[in-house]
Image 1 (cartoon, rainbow, N blue to C red):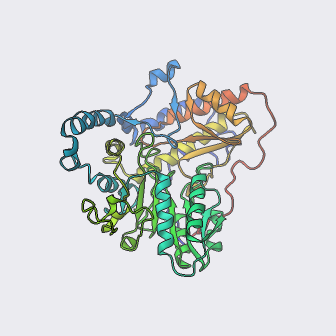
Image 2 (cartoon, rainbow, N blue to C red):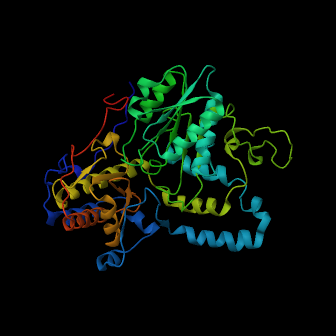
Length: 454
């Protein structure tokens, strides 16, 4: 049984109860004051100025909103517009083709990969940026199958996965003659066999915000001779990942959520250093050739992480992402995690204080070991509730059939944001006709994950 790293505790939950259905330790009039106190003591508060966000005066006047959807699209870092203007005017407008060498365009996928690497606990030379998350999932799954031992007949797929991962895994399995077996992440350690080539697992469940046990699941897969492929879309930039420390084989992730790279910004592929010389991409493009300008009809892969590339990089999006990543200068991912837990604890306490009893329940775990950086609340008429929240300036999102999602990006989300969002949620719920209480416990942690308690 693996050990799950200790999660730092935080000041926001020092006085709050575990159950949000119970009235909070603070009454309604004290939540806003407590938010101001927490913001005043927040060591990351100044990072908010690195982003283009609505001001406090805009929010107070009702002209702008609270942005709690960074788990879908991160806010705009202030450094990006100027950098892109420079790229367009000078590098594209003046240097033109010379920019592939003189402006460093050609090496951007590896250079920017090295900027992402420390955020996911990876060494330089193990992350390459380019293509979409879907394309990188395909590369990782098929490449992993090709590295698996002989006699493997199946791949395991997170049964709660984001649908695209499942679609691609099934397509890859059909192409390689393997079967797909959906398994709940908490059951993977028990379900993996010597016939399993790999498992594709989400680090954080996109719907519930549940954090899965990356160290324990990876160790269980390796013990059975299988590879571990992780989707980091909802964890990278929000919490420590530890790819190298936990010997993850392959990982993919997007960059437009907690990494704030912009809509459709390119994704990334991680290949553990010890596997790179064995990785055989199912998309052998000219950019990953050992001699890309030799135009040899026979494919020969480059050394190292470059073999994860495919075709010509999307330079404008890549360089926007590179500028966006400047906000991480001097920022510790451990400090990000501490604030993330403090924000989500505080938000849950505020919801307990403001929401009518029984109208919402959290499907996000309260135990810090199993919580990502979002809070998902189940309630009746959730789509209508979210529409009204957005109309009132609180931007989250809705997932069928009954889940409200609120993403907390510690780089720019304040405790005042969390308090106001909960207060408006309470107002919206009280204005709607009651359709019966939410059923079930205040939190639904599900079965104990592999490695829990270790």
